[in-house]
Image (cartoon, rainbow, N blue to C red; front, side):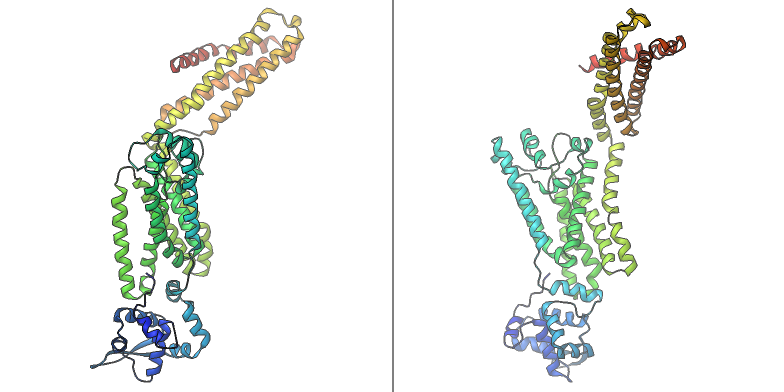
Length: 502
């Protein structure tokens, strides 16, 4: 959408002045006090009248020119406004016009100046470099397992060697359900810089190069960087929420790119009235075409449509907030800065909600619970039972209180203390998991906590018995035995579960 003066540059070179807007402004000033007829000007210099009209409309939007009487011979005419005459007579104002700086601090002037000024897309170049560096690292990982060719030629949706996922994409930063279950949330961002194959990288990097420069120029560097990061996070969150892969991984900058394209569309929608009509029309047409292409690509095998949608929603929402942070009332601008954090937070909440309600996530959580908590609970209880029978029970059963060897008592106390610590730590981990929405899984968690607690309390009471020695009363011993009475059934149940798992 950058201005393209075309043949008008010939007109510029025929003047001492080089900037097209300044050429037009000077021509109108030269014709003053009479109207200036731009159609005749275009014919005289053999220029395409469309760029001339766009440039003239840009000056009109800036309040530098106004319509004048039309001529039956030369067509519509324009003349300078008071502000236009002031700018033409002010070298400093003309310098701002040439450099693309806004002549006033109105929204329209700032929007149009973002298209006119010379700009270096620093953030886009850094993002491109980061993606290429990560791709190079992925090639290195693939070369270590002799799968360089398979990696470079990989296509989303096609069967691939499992080692590509476990030895290349995962170490590079890709994300799957298991990573999130283990708390590796940082992968939701790193996955945006990992790509599956050369074609995947080329398509995304071309889109980033084409759209990123425009969005960075119009929104500004730090706003663009925020939009990209928030969109990437949002795309990964929604992509994983509704497609929780356990074997493969979610990778690619597509979610972030959809957010960038959503920000471009938001800019056209919010600022179109401040642009020349032809430019705004082309922007809306391009926006529609891009939207159709994204929808079609989202339906292809191996492509995360949910990731595209999440990135577009997060990027569009961030862009909307940043627009009002930029042009809204002063108080609102400061309030909207912390509100930006709401967008990634909502993306995270959506993912957490899916983890607790989506059947696929519930199944994965159940598998994770069995591997990390269910089986370890049974093993802890079995180990605790064995330690108690061999180091403590024999001492209590074979020796009266007054005749217990001190070294065996100390050994029994140390054994109980060690087992109590292990049981308490696992119990605390289970409590920190929170409440599962899946009733069977929650019952299993609650039962595991209750069993660990019962054994821990019985062991603590036994330790107090040994530490008290002769001061331990019969009532105390009776309470200790009551704590142990239900444990036989608990150990038997967990021992049976362990055998079934094996």
